[in-house]
Length: 112
Length: 115
Image (cartoon, rainbow over all chains, first blue to last red; front, top):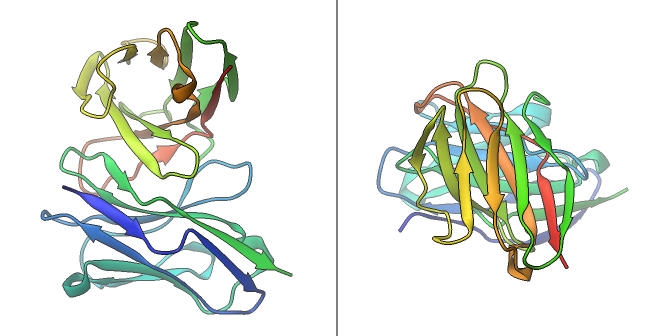
């Protein structure tokens, strides 16, 4: 069955700390991977995506993610977080009928 | 991408009532997806529609839930005879085409509370 696993449900960091959020997927077809972010009170918005090509993808607001096929992983990273990065982060993979299959999300809190 | 409009933002219903959730996709988008997010869980796919067609409803509960996307007007997710377990956030997404290169754009969601 297709699934996405996010390892950390809650992460608390101080400003300027480095961030890595884990994401592993289980899917046998062509892989399209996404990270979405939901800021408090706002809608989901796309941070970055991987469809093909360079496995290191860069997104908005200084985020990047690396697709490692051998590990079925697509971890999200940011070298130095800001208070404004406080949000919930979701990893997703596109399923066989173009629907998105989601991880449970990671709530990130940045302490000022 | 405030173009995907969902209303209402918050909906309160008593057990046994009907809930109707509306989604207007972004201009030019003909594909609509509905997802449900239960508390402390990720989003779960419910149904995928194109204009006047249900493409995939494999994530919809077999009873009480239905969805439509008419030729004119918004997509509607209807929940009949709501129960407390239906309390959740319901998100709609739209995309212009069906393809690997397409991104789904999300609305702000409707938070349904069943009393």
